[in-house]
Length: 368
Image (cartoon, rainbow, N blue to C red; front, side):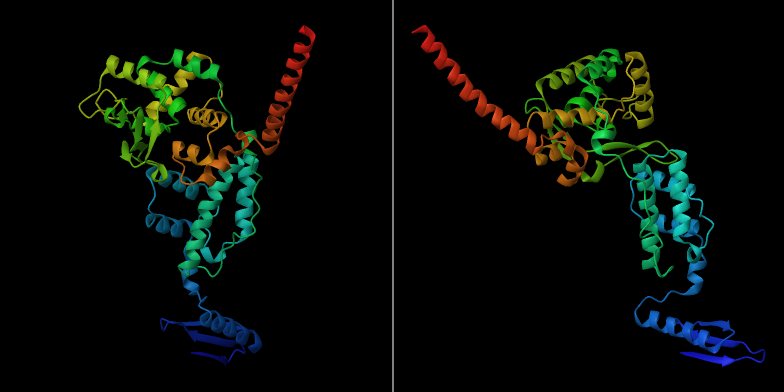
């Protein structure tokens, strides 16, 4: 129900009742402007895009907090996304007043501060998810983020740093004896930090030469580490080389396991937490004299070895526990031989076989 009437002061008062029966009114100097406003409200109601003006009065920070509380996130994802909430400069801006310019200024500031393009993209995607939910919740009528330009991300081959075999050998030699097998599991089985921390003796099939990834250790916000399923549901079987099996055998024989069976326990019998692993890793880097190698780089080293050995995309995906082959390709496509490389290799084989035959003929003719 809508109407427009002239007030004693000459202003035009346009009013309507929303779907919940609440009345909304606005004053205009001209009747035509009031009628245009009512027409827009009517059109949005008919098309299902109507938003109660009062709903948009909530600030971005308040809405994000409520929205985040409904999401099913892993502990570290919750921590990282809350960091995004606290880092945006428009947290006190009402949702109805949020414009693309707010987002553009935020992106510009992050870029000027030196944040990597991937970090900026990740943070913006979190905010975009909240804004998309706000549209669905009828808090705002439209999402201001479409068309937002982000810094160009570096190509994978430029941004990825692969540790050398010499660097990994130096790390294995320099590390604590109790953690040597930990490095080997990351470098020769491609385990993530949390997956290696969550290994139990029962996960290793020494006769079958396999390892089951069933869990991971993650830091919980405001508390101790906790055991959770692997990232993206990437439970998997990893096929182990004999050299790694020998290192694991030596680890168990030298250090044993506690009743719970953790391969890398703390002094009080819990699986080693990420904070302890990170501290140990930095000490090991310093002792080994190795710079610029993140522990996740050992996983990249493993992937590069599989690819160099001729493994296809699906094989590498399953070994790494990626949720899809596209993730594997997006990360490691530059490591696979290109069509040009394969063409040259095939042509080289043909040339070598012909030239070798010609050389044999020449030697046979000369000897006769």
